[in-house]
Length: 145
Image (tube, rainbow, N blue to C red):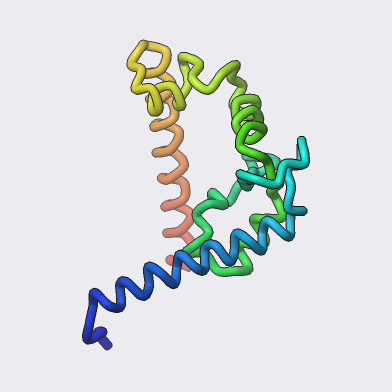
């Protein structure tokens, strides 16, 4: 059934989702100890996947996810202050700085188009398409049975 006042409904939903996000985030921060896992900082905390390879979805995209999935994903995370989150991400990616040439980050964030960065983007796109094709194949197989 359509809503009579679409603008009013959209405004309500925007505020509702914003409150839901902040409530969920507050719960996750408390659940994970409320301080940086490296330095005990309590300000500017960010949720970080301990093992990025085990990530089902970016934890920041929790707004549209069911509560159970968010809590399940949060168990794979730790709290880090901004500084330590950046350092860990650089280490996880095998980089020396945020913008090492030959990385997807350098291609996207600094818009570098050197041959190394272009190749990194190309490799990422090929892998992304391969992964999506595999997901579609699995989904189609499930739908056929």
